[in-house]
Image (cartoon, rainbow, N blue to C red; front, side):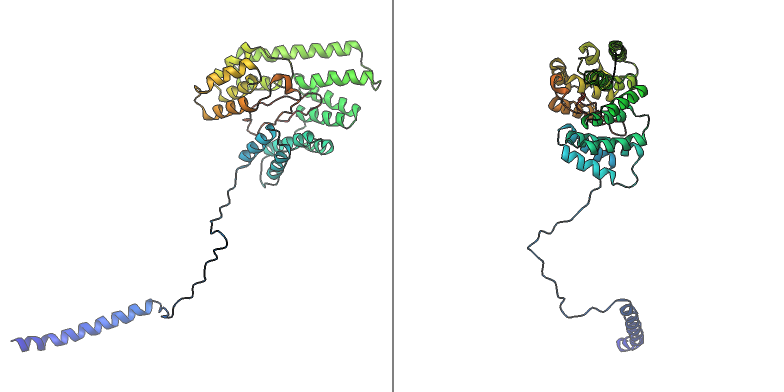
Length: 325
């Protein structure tokens, strides 16, 4: 029985072996044959660090914010370099281009490169003909270049576009007086008195917007304009805005408050209670870098970002440029 069983199993075993051999042959056809020779591995160059190079691309708005901070800190050459890089980015919006050119022009002005500043501001005015800031800054560049008549014409244009532009009004009054004394133009005493009255009227209107505390857009605009002139703003019109529902209003109010001893103390007191990290960061920057009112007229202002989120910065005088928006 055993021999018979083995005899019957033999054909089955042979068939199984043949089938298995064919299956292996088919499978081997699908598997590439590797060389049995040892692979030659290129020795690693240990003279250079083996690091992974990752290129990070920041968005234009982020780059603009970085450039704005350098400008605000007085690093004008670095700011000019950063703004110039933004302008090389393909596909940036017109607002971003205007913001970058405004910052670049201001950096040039602060570096006493008045011709380059003028040309850059002219480009801003070409993109934004209604931009009073551009015409004001063009006037300041013309003034530094000794072109009084053109400076006066640009200031008049700026005030036509925005009669509440206080810094432009102050510079206009100053240049009117200087030009009259130099005999380069004839302004009467009544002309000067009228300009002073217009200045006071606009200032009271803007402070009224702060006291009302209702329209965030008007408040931010008013703070921006008021912060660029030497006359102090009443603290009771500014400090309540540190609790305004709008985070942008709180940022702008913080930069204005930081220029006054009382305002800076109040800002420090409220800093830990502020929940918005963006506002808190802006306040920290203001406490650290915002110039006191006495020296603000010697410090140029920084442009807003295209999104309007940049905080208001220190003001220019008739000898320093004002920024565009």
